[in-house]
Structure formats: C-alpha cells, structure tokens
Amino acid sequence: QVQLVESGGDLVQPGGSLRLSCAASGLLLDYYAIAWFRQAPGKEREGVSCISSSGAGTSYTNSVKGRFTISRDTAKNTVYLQMNGLKPEDTAVYYCAADANAGSTWCSFYGMDYWGKGTPVTVAL
Image 1 (cartoon, helix red, strand yellow):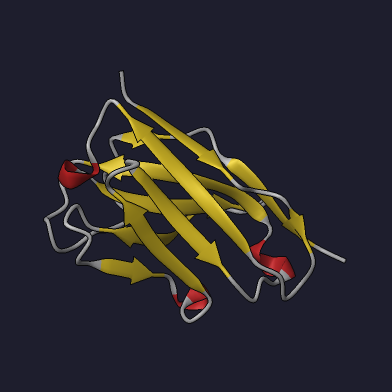
Image 2 (cartoon, rainbow, N blue to C red; image 1 turned 60 degrees about the vertical axis):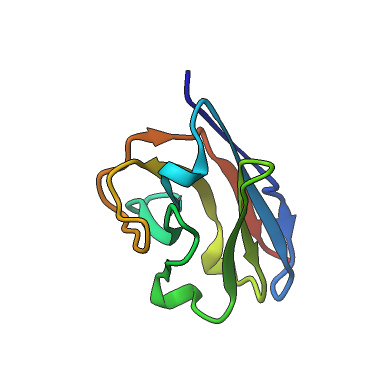
C-alpha cells in the first residue's frame, strides 16, 4: 500500500522559513517523480515544485523560484521542500504527490498517481 505523509507545516511569520517533508512508503523514490502542490483557501490547486526519479531534474513555479528548494533523501525515502523568505501568499495546504510516468530526468505537475493528505502552512504576523 502506497502512502505519502506530509509534515512540517506550521504558522510562521513573513520572511521566515519552514521545511516540509514527504515520507513515502510502498514505493521507491528511484522510480517516481515527486511533486509538491498547494491549495490556498478559495483557490485552485497549483504545482509548486517537483523532482525527477533520478533527482537530476527539478522544476519550480515562478512565484517560488529562488526561495524554495526541493531535495530528497533516498535512504529515508523522503522528499523535502525547504521554504525560505515566506510570504503571506504562500499560505496554503501543501500536498506531495508521486508520478510513476515521468522520465528519470524530468518531472511535471500532471498525471500524479498517488497523493498525500496535506500539511497546512500559514504565513502571518
């Protein structure tokens, strides 16, 4: 049974940092690209960042470039999203998802096979 479990969400002040974790079980990161999505209240879900199954390819939505960094630890079968310089507009529930069909060196925000349940991030004073 595949499970993706997000953690690390919290209330943080503007300019602060958080590191989200996506712990995977029932699948190996070597065979799946992992993507982070977020959904703010009243807004559609959007792709934030992804990492390919080899770890060689990453992608970021424009609004987080230079502030967020995706990485992974294959020994722990976990993907991380380091978020720095947080802004109120980053407030959302953050989800990770796994894609078995992406190439080893690229990833996308489409065609996810498995989803986690999300972790909330609130950026406010």
